[in-house]
Length: 130
Image 1 (cartoon, rainbow, N blue to C red):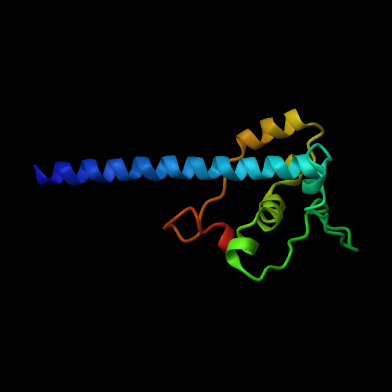
Image 2 (cartoon, one colour; image 1 turned 60 degrees about the horizontal axis):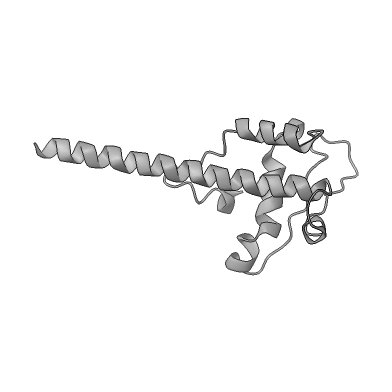
């Protein structure tokens, strides 16, 4: 009888982790949606000014990457939109980044599976490992 309680506890914990991962992925998609809007001048001006396209003198595949600013603190630097936005944007496929309209981008980002964590322990360490 005790094994069943442990199994139910394990199943409940797994469900909670799946819900948390889905919410986390939705949050990442919302950040990328804001980055798309700002890089295509569809959002507020202050967001447009927050992101800068990375210029490269070479003919490389990732021509749509954004500059990641340097940071001094984690709370106001590494966890800020100005850092997380470019970090997420730069891992997206160019085909998604170069969507011709907001609706096409939204449909493409819906299909994006998210990022898998390398540590296999949590889903919140992803941005810290980029």
